Image 1 (cartoon, rainbow, N blue to C red):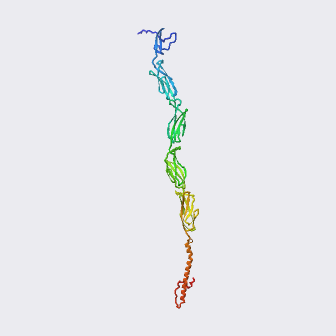
Image 2: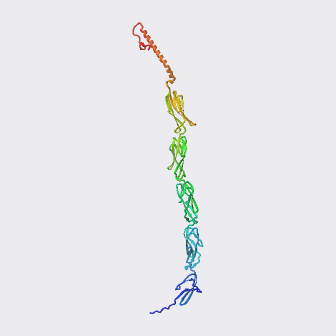
Image 3: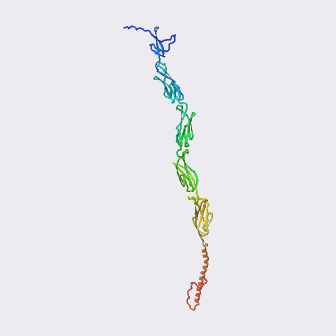
Length: 457
């Protein structure tokens, strides 16, 4: 079956109309060979169709489309927090035709006013939006820290002890409060602080710590309390006193930095007694006085010398001797605590007329009897003395009754001799008378029992 040939249509040529005067057509859009027209900018345009030399014309009026896009300028930028920036927004329809808009502005950080003037605040990346009829456009801004405007120290108004250390930090800020890196120079009113802000106190008190950077200064105060007890000092530390005196010692506690630390020490003395720091000496010598607390000990030395003479001991305490004998006495002086007091000027005397004693204490017995050897010493106010008994035995010739007896002895002996001689002579005479008697015999016995020739004996 032969189908009839379709009628060949003339080929059409589409084009936009040209302006009179032979000028090229305005950019009123585009049309393809199938007659599909794509508008361009708003305006009135002619559409031409040409085929086999025949031209057809149509007019088209293009108006703005709906807002399809908003472009924000600048789209991306970097500023510091000290700066501000003007953003602008343009609206376009889907064919990129300008659409007049009056956008509402907003920002994720910082602030933007109704004209698009942006003022940053925090450091970071911020987005600025322009919004109109549900369409948004945006620009991004990177906010850097601004210039150093403020310096702050931490911690503030800290309290530590003199045994502690404390690290201070200094932070810089711009005008919006964003941190600005700083390398500060440190200074402390008292104590020491290094370049890293490490503070080491010394004396207790309230002190200033300051930092300087970028022409700015900041300061804070630190209260330093005494540290732990590290040392005890006893005062006076080296003292001389007599055994008659008393002395009040005091003890002061210090921490490692030399700050006074309150204490309630325990007192002890090597010799003598001490209570509450009040020291009463006893024996002479060099003795230590200690104050202690929590294993910390402070020591003082006390040199105790003898006190005033309180008594004198004479030696020997008693002596028996004969007339003409000598005895060396010694005297030792003691204070009230029983300490020997050397170097005293002792005066000697004898009470009772039994002898004499020299300045060295040598006693010479001169007469029988009982007496006292006395040693005395005086300090200008008080006079002290001691004594010893002496018993002197007299010789026979020194007793007058014995002398009388001795003187009378020859007379007694002579009288006895004469008496005996007289008896013998009487007996002899009686015997001779008997011999001359007329009667012989034995005469009477010799009265004295001796021979006749013992008459002169």
